Image 1 (cartoon, rainbow, N blue to C red):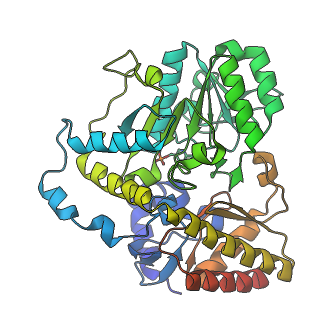
Image 2 (tube, helix red, strand yellow):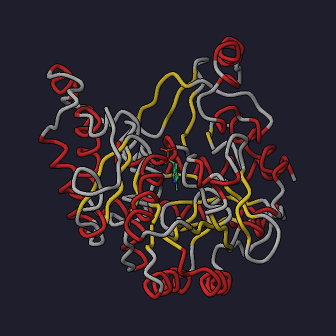
Length: 429
Ligand SMILES: *Cc1c(COP(=O)(O)O)cnc(C)c1O
């Protein structure tokens, strides 16, 4: 496979964009490769600037759940564009979109549209603080909630750990209000609440973590979070930026049967456009300006084109809920095939699946938290990634990410992937 054009574009990009890319993972640094520049996508295929095609397991990190340039989605898009792109005034489709989300998630009575997942979680935390009148928040090590200051935090040393910034430019005074706990560890949460529960505005959690590789929460863990936040009048925020409308139509809230106070969305709900949203119980959301005192705004929030595309995406999912079972079946087939290959080759690896999301960890499970996944061999993943890339398969360019399926996959694609997986494992073992 040749990557000449991608290389040229990358070199040019390096002059004008930090690292040549607009989001760090795209630089392919953690798989010791250069970035591949994509030219187009259709179905579950993407094509790069050199004309190489790949089966795409990134799917724009989730949004392409119906495949790239799905004809049903893009039909009529020109008519929408012709009517004007943005007004800074309200449009009907924003109300349609909000209604659709509210009807889909029992926990949500009202919802605000924003432009990214980062904005959604950042705003949700402001709302939680404004509503409870408390300042501290809890996040879990290994969960990612976008790049706002108070969430760019990892745990420091000590049992009940105050956050340490994971980025330059984040003041310690800000992350002092972020407490970092261990995922799937209720004991850690209990201790934290016993000591400072009165000051905790909210827990924010990925109910199925997709940003340390795939690590699903145990049901008792999420139930425990729900219980303890109620006890202390703190809010429970589900970050469903990945899982919303993905692992089930009603996301993790539906799968686990839990009623969070605020839910955050992104990725899928834009259908490929930059969209995020946060919604929750009426009495909580009524604190958002202009009804209440929590300020949050956006020039392009609820942008008509983005809303139309997002609405179509979600509406399709609502009208075709059988796709969730179909995607899970495909994921199970992939899981089984890869597990057999691991067995055959004796490579120290574990395939983890939850619904239609998967991660191949180069290490031995169980994987319940950030410490567990940190024991994986990221060099092995890098080698594996490059072998698969050369066989025309685009995996996430980092060990601690997930593979995403879409409705555009078929059995042949999966068989080919399983075969390529066997060859690649053989080669790197
Ligand atoms: C991607 C992601 C975000 C951030 O969304 P952006 O649109 O990239 O800002 C937040 N939370 C989770 C769980 C995510 O996966």
